[in-house]
Amino acid sequence: MTARNDDRPADVGLYDDFSQDYDRFVDWDARLAFELPFFRSLFSEHGVRRVLDVACGTGQHAIALAREGFEVTATDLSQAMVERARANAAEAGVEVAFSRLGFGELADALDERYNAVICLGNSLPHLLTADEMRYALRDMAAVLRPGGLLVVQNRNFDRVLDTEQRFMPPEAHAQDGDEWVFMRFYDFEPDGLRFNVVRLHRPRGEGWQVRLGHTRLYPWRYAELRELLDEAGLDLVAAHGNYRGEPFDAAESGDLVLVARAR
Image 1 (cartoon, one colour):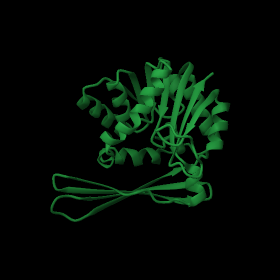
Image 2: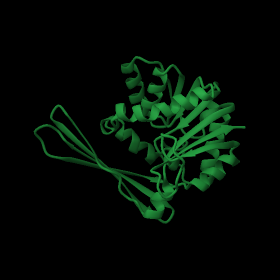
Image 3: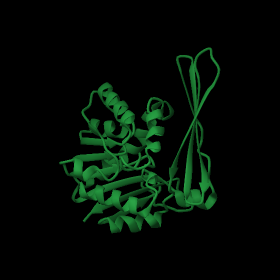
């Protein structure tokens, strides 16, 4: 979710703080039912067996892939997210090798080389400069076997920037009398985006409690990422607008899903 250990520790704090609540705001059964067929098809076509999930968050994609029979390693810079992911994997009864690592630290820390690396959940935009992005992409390429795949999922920032789309739909959750509401929105700044996260929690029988966090993002356009992938030794295979595999449309797609192959 964040860059190297010596970069912007405040970013890590946002996700450390958010680790216990994150899974409340995602319908993982529905999300994975929609997304997993894409990975099954892609990985079957390319003979993928070993997968590295970079910026894994609470580990739900890594766990789902492990259930599918893949050998999965997963990393995140947030220690709290890694701990939450380990707990989720234990509860699911699957084996995933979790490590606390940020972008740019993979090749030095991991001995294994992978058939596929995935970086999902709009994680790459935490890299704020072209130099940081080059470093991270080269690091991911370095842990891929020749011909291995990199799969990246970001928001379609071409559309976000061109339409000044600030707000994402709110999410709500209720459990045992407690209620949560989760809101996310951007502030447009000269050198990027301020990503704001508002969490409202009403414990049973009490009033609303509000917590606000924020971090910096850079809204990478498709053309920028395509060029940086090439510089990192990764050949673009496909650019999708969603996990249905529809072609990416800068004006209409909600997401940007890139598939690249290591040279």
